[in-house]
Length: 228
Ligand SMILES: Nc1ncnc2c1ncn2[C@@H]1O[C@H](COP(=O)(O)OP(=O)(O)OP(=O)(O)O)[C@@H](O)[C@H]1O
Image 1 (tube, rainbow, N blue to C red):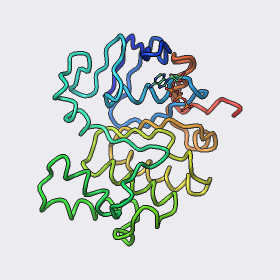
Image 2 (spheres, rainbow, N blue to C red):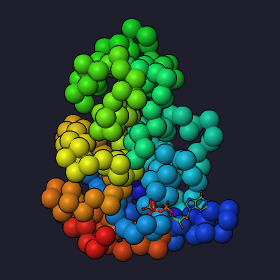
Image 3 (tube, rainbow, N blue to C red):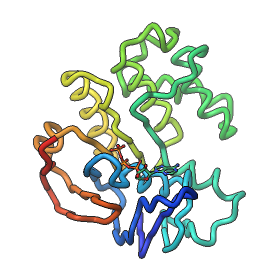
């Protein structure tokens, strides 16, 4: 569960990115976050895994109250939230296997579980056969699948995808979308910030539109709603 009440975010340079957000997203929902460039979509998602702190307001993520949360609890929060970025952010010198295993090593997963879990998630994103490749040897869509595997390796309750198809062609974008749908079908909440009109208008899910740092629209099975 994600709950925000009266959330504002002003960056140190004086830009107000979020201007009073109230919302609730239940476990297992699939939500598109849409809106014009600079509207506050990334800022909204960054608050959820505490990459940014709100200037004002309360945020609850499952059992975590982010307003009162201590610095040392942040790693625990982040175990509940996987993140996927537009530019993949893989470690270039590590193989596909090592990129995913690394995510489990840093949270001190028992070494005997790591191999099985890495191969399971690589299977889920259909990349088991490329476990020994390095990111440069993969297509953009394959790199994004590795980054999804890494994000879900420790079974987070929430997966944030910030423009996951932004660097991909339409067909590859659909592959990524189908993988996200499969992950959602297993009960993971998905928040996908996107400019992909075709996907939003085809796979109808909840749409939260952010404009000027405020929620301009929140519809179940909504549409993309912008010209660009
Ligand atoms: N670290 C930062 N410091 C200062 N201002 C920032 C920072 N990050 C974002 N902003 C500003 O906050 C506003 C909202 O940015 P944000 O990245 O959340 O928008 P967005 O909706 O995700 O945009 P896009 O669709 O282009 O990714 C913008 O005016 C942006 O310039």
